[in-house]
Image 1 (cartoon, rainbow, N blue to C red):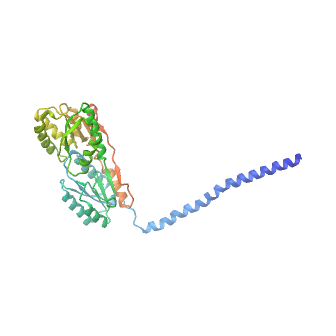
Image 2: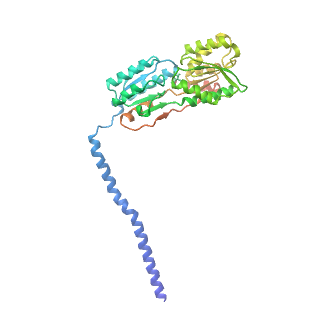
Image 3: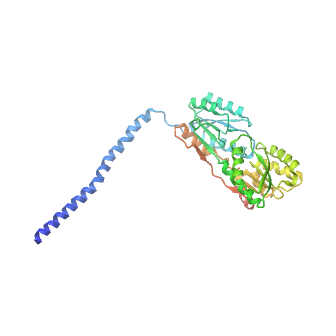
Amino acid sequence: MKKLSLLMIALLLLFAIVGCSSGAAEPAAPAEEAAPAEEAAPAEEAAPAEEAAAPKKMEDLVVGYAQIGAESEWRTANTASIQSTGEALGVDLRFSDAQQKQENQLSAIRSYIAEGVDVIGFSPVVETGWETVLQEAKDAGIPVIMVDRRADVPRDLYATYLGSDFVVEGEKAGNEMNNLLPEGGKIVELVGTVGSAPANDRYSGFRNTLNDNIEIIDSQSGDFTRAKGKEVMEAFLKKYGDEITGLYAHNDDMAIGAIQAIEEYGLKPGEDIKIVSIDAVRGAFEAMIAGKLNVTVECNPLLGPQFYDLALRAVNGEELPEWVPSEESVYYPDNAAELLPERQY
Ligand code: GYE
């Protein structure tokens, strides 16, 4: 009896050992099988890859870039970023300035198509009117990247959009105006270029967050320039005088132009009239240090590095996301002097 139970224990142990070892052997087997399969796979893939065109390198790239113009400090910084990054990377960059005219941008894009560039970058001055030319680029097999501004076109007509969320910028500006005018007030608005994505979105974003006790008594375009910003603010002051307690400008340049108009009128910008604008260019930091601007919401123009990275990926056939957003912040007068030396635009 004792011998029998010992035998049974021995047999059980034997089964247990065999069971374990075979259990352990099971995962090993597919691993062993997987190894040659993994080795074989790249070899098979490598063969057709050798026949196909080798991926392009940055220094092989021919890029056509249709810029909007030189209307603001922001745009100047954006152009510098595209040009200097292109030069540093050894890209063949064909660059054009459309002087804020859509027809000039359209003909620049058409000439890049005719030249057979590898990729086209452009900032659409307005949102509409681009479908035909983008279809022409698509038919020519040239990927198009929208930089800074979006065009209202179907998804298949562009590789990606690289730029800011202008609605969020407008919403931030609305919140800042609420903080500056807690008791409410009457404000005027300097709108950007009519029909442009930043003007449309900064207009609606601002209204998403603005308190009900703040009334927008007038809203006119200053075309994103200092000269126009000043001119339109002069007209506002003539019409409403010191009824105006706040100004929302869609960019810093228009705010800087308006600041001049307010001073010439005899009021104190930043005090009698609270001012919120967008971009965070150096001129805005200087105005904040002088106490003439209350807040600037950042819009990052340094898009060169991200643009060329996306351009190369598009040329090499990679599927890109619909939108690559840029990161942004909000700045106030209290630390403007400290931050100004670090600002790159
Ligand atoms: O805010 C303005 C420029 O499209 C984001 O265009 C850009 C805008 C920028 O002229 O200053």
